[in-house]
Image (tube, rainbow, N blue to C red; front, side, top):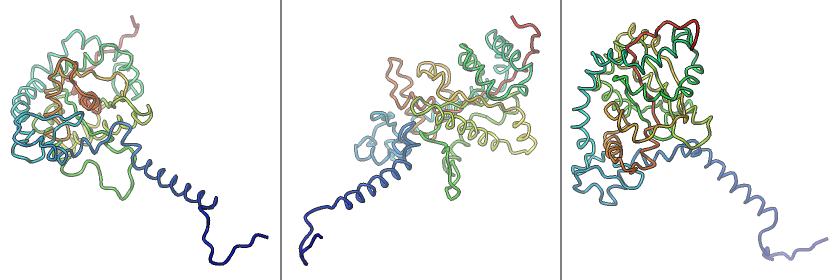
Length: 332
């Protein structure tokens, strides 16, 4: 029997106390991991969502007329008179928006249907889908796009294409009942204003079909990236539907839309995106859009990891003015 003198002090941590403390710390770390793991798979959204405080503390917003980029974090529109990145980008974006909208709904859209490369891909797609998009399950469309080496080059030939970009880790792929819907009201209003500026409703009305291509940046697991790509295609559909005020038009859009989930397969290169898609680009804030435009102008490999990720954290909206040709009974 072990005797302990009354009033004596313990000589240190007991084994049981150490085990208890270790379990407590492990539980706390596990809870912290659960909160952040989904977001960090594609990059920390906080750095991209609100960089204004960091800009002000570094003096980046004091009187600069050009878009400021510090590391991989693009300058945001912080509301500072000397750092209104949205105003810097506004002139170029507005100038290109009108011309892009005209090409997308006028002769430009029809001219793309006579492009030999477009016709070739549509014919192969018709053969795969028995002459109708409705005959192609989502998985078949994705397999077709992954296998078609000229797929991205053909997509860029449709003048009505718009790219909707999302912050890292969004839209959320797992939501709780008590959480506010995504996107928040101010972000939704920004997306809607940009879609209206590009004349998206008219593009959708004029289209015979609409491809929604969901993509994700590389990094993280294939399964998680696929969920983000699907969430982006679905978010794009909700925004597009909201541009149409008539219920019959919304129903018609639902019949036109086909989703194609590329996820992190066939990642887009900054040089290719800069050459073909900047006129139809919509990001989540004027400042980020201006910063991305600035980075993509650097043709010497200057695009940062943030820019490479952002061009792939996207849903492509591709209005197609052409009907699919009849499927060939004997394939070449």
